[in-house]
Length: 321
Image (cartoon, rainbow, N blue to C red; front, side, top):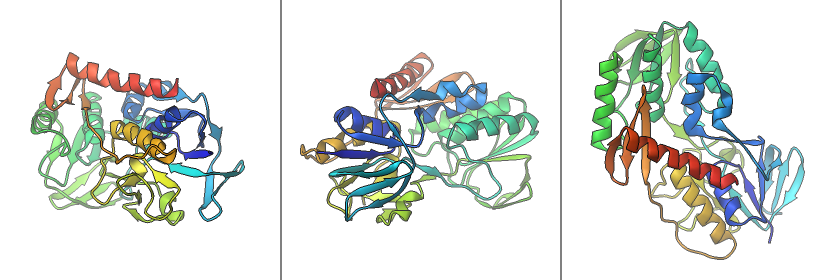
């Protein structure tokens, strides 16, 4: 059986490790540790977020002929018996703001941060919280704008409150319950007044990649719709895993969940069918020099949080080797 995997993120590598005879297609020759992108902004060293692939067909996917079961790429046409789509995520972007999706984005933001005096960070997720903290460390005047009434809304109350307190102690200006209505030549127009910034970084949320819609797959927020077995709602021999896929009841976008989904999608594709069930073991955030977050259902900080974070990196390396 020929199984083809589109995309080599956490889900794609997990699928490949589950069935080594599959073919992994990715446009890069390295794996991006997305949770290390803020570290690239900090250090300017892109290598800390890169891990080279050991087995990959380097090509860009142009289209998929689902009827004939063929993937059309820049390196030719690849037939498949089963197809697993693991093409990751894209970032919502308010016009006039910068995104942080890849290493190139991180290096560009690093350069712009050096020149900026006033920095606005949009969104209250982990990416925004970490960036706001780092910008403040650099001595910038920082505004963090979040539409909800708290930060880190997907994490525990303890983590949310700790992030708020820590950023306030650092001098970050928090605008909670504030919606950005637009950006006009460096001025943020919000429901809580206007803010002037030299650099605006968007972290307002994530969605699936645009290619999901281009392929004609039924999707929610550009995430292909799959059933409880991670099989596409449109095609019998197509599966989706990771940030590019979701069920009607929703699958969270996280590296840990993607790893579990990639494994389950591959097992189902090769005939070992079972429903997809996931566990979120740890979500760790870093502000300044201190890590904190949720680990196995409880709030942790300091050394325990660092240990949980290192475990995540170790697991990513194991996926490749």
